[in-house]
Length: 365
Image 1: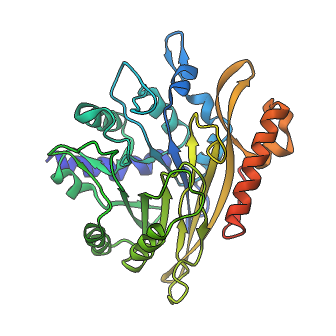
Image 2: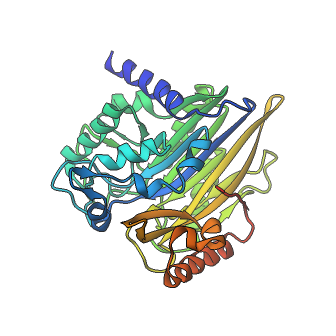
């Protein structure tokens, strides 16, 4: 019975929490974001006199996130309770999830190389916090029965039947003790999961995957081959993370296929982090739009670059996610110094050059 109740929570809560568009019911917009990190500097910046507050981090993108039917991010930290810690073994205050959810995120992937950072207790407590808040998640499970009940994660939004799948290359060599389950990259398992998504009536299949080499700005051969495997076995789009930098993307990963061109974004970079060296101080949000055309589903994809400002805004020192186009147009509005503007422009130019028109740009403003 408890697994049946969890399925109901998974299917009902995301829809009530994030389906806020009351306009066009023939179109669906999903925003994907990169790695939500929890470095020590972020924990200290969010501390208040009576707890923690991460809400300022999202204030410049909250409206954009809430404009979508669903916003998704990779939760690359644990919620193991105090004492809190940053790199190399992340454990953040529960408030980071509360504020990210309030900002518009309705679904998180929880499987990545840091999901075992706090051991079995932290792994389980992280799931408990998600479930206590009614926030949808996928990728880590208390046991195989829970995984079977919730992966692929099926969601019905605005009449679209969607399947979400997610996997990681590893857990930093920290074992995942039984009965816990963390979805690992395994082509046999992934093929079975994709077939199950089809059996469950998925009209569109989204695979989110933690892969690649950290800080490499171009996807490697293994990523490209695995993306083609996933697409050829039923995934319609592959969204990647882990390198902490934006990598290249394609709208036509299988050019010889007669289907609608398949989308692969190899890495979206960091959603928010304390990393400041070249290419790690920002990322992209990927906007997927689905529309019906008779029996077909048409897809379109764009990206919005953003830079993480670590500094003072209206007297508050914090980490702020800034859409780069808006910040470049009016840096005074965001109270940026010349040094900050130069760093933002460098990140922005490098990102645009790397994507090189492979997907179009969209704007939150």
